[in-house]
Length: 395
Image (cartoon, rainbow, N blue to C red):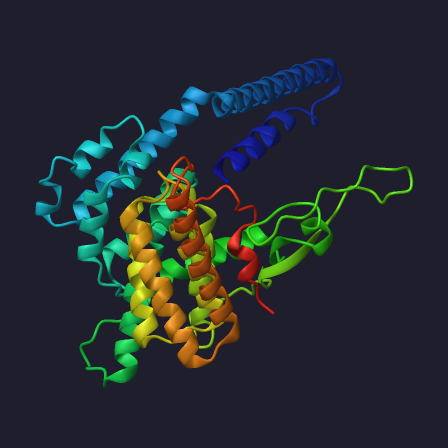
């Protein structure tokens, strides 16, 4: 605003020099006015040229990959140093300390792959509204850096487990006046939910399902179709479509976590975790398996929460190494077995079908690997052609 006022004042003073004098001064006044106008025009042109050069220089900086890389590294190092200041001093005593992560060429990826950093954060989280670690997670997720976002997404099983267990504890016991709130957990979970709501743009999350016509021409775990007849001019087209199933309906914006929307919001966070699961560290997957096993004993499991959690367990059970290890496979198998027992007790047809099918897939994969030592992996027999998501659809 001051720059605009100065610019207007200059225009006013330059245009008001002579209009009152007599005829002898007319040509001199016109000359001065013309000179002033030309000077202003040249000044404006120079200003526009400088502005264009600045925009061009900024655009060149944005297009420079080295500049973008350095800005990303600087941002990640700043977030790590902020995290160091929020953790107890003994958290950086290991060889894999946070201070050494900040010196990495790829600090965000180093932080994502640091088990000691994950342990330090998990042991210090309180989930209260004034919890500085929850503030750090929230602010880090708002950064325009995909690697930093992955660090927060890797914490989803931990955050969800702590949050739901404390909600369950507060619902079964009388809360004391000094009990901490859970606003910190809720803020981070809502940030994840809002991000998914924006990215989906009011559309549901869909999955393609092989149609019977497709299965008639392609083998699966359950059948081997006969060889197709030789094509003729009258035979139908070989382009066989897929059916579409709804994994998650369109999302509605939420400003808080109500009890009626809690399962949906956490389920969306699990969907977000699953969409990046190939980049998630092993301890995050193991945390999810332990959380799912504990859910089977004492927590409510509506389908909005059960389904995305089971998709992650399916990955932990059936994915090939190095995406999963033996301990993750065993933990996932134990969690799914517990969930199957819970579903049978609750008489939930969807949950029974999904958990039992995953256990059967796992059993057949083990048997196939045992009978065929040359099989690629224990968890991925060559006959499996269809993903288990087709068993995890919502009505």
